[in-house]
Length: 498
Image (cartoon, rainbow, N blue to C red; front, side, top):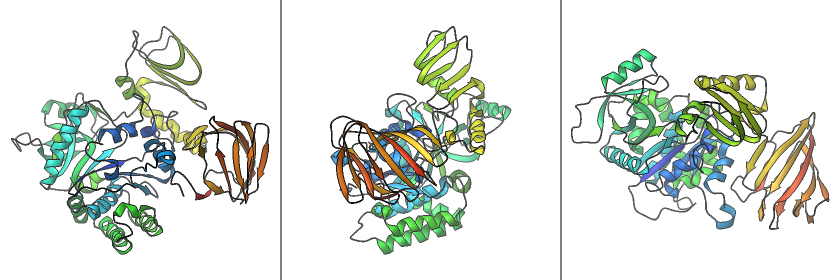
């Protein structure tokens, strides 16, 4: 990790990158939720969020909070060339399980307060879309100024319609005359349509964006006041930082990959209950202000919301991929793999992926999550993972599977290699299709060329490396009693996954 050289106090960015990946299925999956998808533009929503705050916080002063199953994708998206140029991604706090936003924010605040007692933290979801960078930066600047005065600050979005899918913030229009913020009177849960229409007509309500700014010390004080159980657990994590830290770990986030800190975080997540920062703290605190946002904002909450953000053709359609359409209107049609042909659709969503197809009415886009629940209840892997999975070294595609066997096609990028690893419950047979594979099996190292193969027994240390200048393609046949992707122990890894 690169070290911060300047003197504080600083602004730190905390990016919340959890998520279940339900409303954008089949593009999203449990292990590939919305923030990792390229939905608008050339970058994922996570990458756009990181780029958006780089002027506020360099990479060393960002903290990403995510789940264990999504760490690999974050490493890949934030630092795809880590092996070649030595660039390290920002610190990543790994949650053993999702417990909503309060524990995640509290944990990040503990680390930031250790780094900088007066540090201001900007808390951002990783899956929002914001068009106007300049206005965003100005509004965050106003929020940081208010936070330095000691306030808990949230950003509110001026409503453009009677939306029932967002929470609302009621503010005092007469407060803080020359300031860029207003005093918050109350937080309101997602309303029904009639209530939302009333909020819109009154002119003193904003949508709750889920973006917050405050001093790390200030939010920890409020957590102590309103969530004493969480505060006690956070205190034990802070004690580990104090006990284990020192000259060897000049920055508290350097401790994140140590055994002591991993254990302390696991204990924290065993003790506390899931609760949002809104419900646990913001609705109870007397020190909350809101900055009305001046930038265009969307939480990209469904395919219907995405449809509203993308350019349309002359018939009102949003079409991408290999699609042939005849006389459809106002529909979103996306073909990622196969040819997709559509005729006479109206107000529909069609999304084709390698292993699943979604067809639904645009006004039922929020119900996609219910389909995902059905798939998950039936044990369908399509709710969890794609057939083709990207890895820092390349990708693999599931070709076939059955009782005690699985077949994959693996592509290893030039000058890349997998981790040195073992599997306890399966053996593997590798056949090289193209390129050169330098293989490490037990204590042997040798090169394989197209048409050649090798066998990897269970519990043998092994690794594949591509020493060439073209991709190496390998067909892998697995055999064993258990073939889950979690049957892996890494001993050495170029991408920090040990």
